[in-house]
Length: 238
Image (cartoon, rainbow, N blue to C red; front, side, top):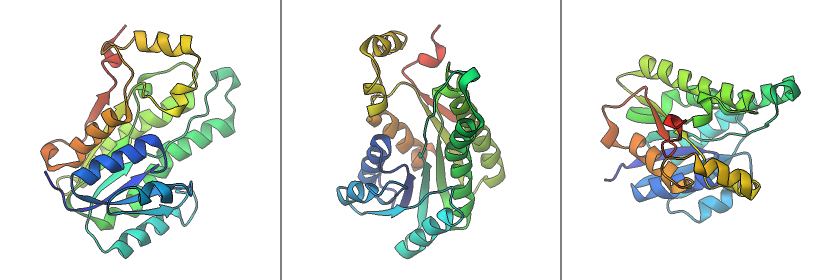
């Protein structure tokens, strides 16, 4: 199923962002990968019909720089995937204001600023997909990340109501995904976490990309304001 037009993906230099790019390219999208990491240009160079924009969405001119890149492209903006995010984990008693604020600003405020910045460029029938997390249901040592990702779900639902029926807005909540961050975990910790996943395995960036592709495509035309948990059943496990 082809979905011609432009897809903007933030966090495009990372493994999940790059995998989302590869998956949406197969659906016929042109791609604009956005990241504050200059290596995003290397990722874009390896994908068909992809360009890169280096921008920090918390900078005053960050969203405008992305909007200019969208307009330079000259295409129709059909999908926006707000995938950029960071963690700064700590026990609540050790979590300082700076670490709390930074995670909320990057994961939630940055996504909000870009979404509003591109509002006028989204075509009728376009889709916005926000990257939340199963952690938004609650995770030890991640109060800042939990707050940000839960906030994204609320933002998704409010925006879905505000922009219906012209633009659909949904969220994906990955669980434990095989990324450099999880690969750096001690083996015993990683095994313990995997043992709690009903699907019996850790997730892959490709699993997340498939969920995003569904919500970005016309196949989900009657879906808006929803949270798709992509966690191997972890959200329902004891």
